[in-house]
Image (cartoon, rainbow, N blue to C red; front, top):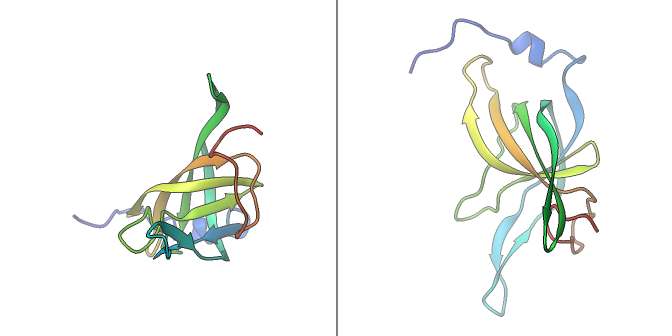
Length: 138
């Protein structure tokens, strides 16, 4: 795979586009004494360019109303959609919580990764506390 001819690194690094208020919650998967796995980790500030993907959509189910929405993030921070050792990264942006669902190197800006994250909760809870069911309005 070759490199792209267009390099937009200068645009992505521009303070007019770069959002420095992003918060990453990376959780190491740790086995508890009862044998269950639990994510353990805390908040890490990072920067990136965030683009909403189509806004938010209301889904009505018998369990309640759920809001779905995705964002795309272009960042130099290595994010993960999860593996054997880490749960999928969680990103807090504009007061909403998103879970990383896909990552890939982005050919148009050296050192940047393109990340797709899905809305999980409209009411973020601080790390270390119990969150309501993902995406449901409470």
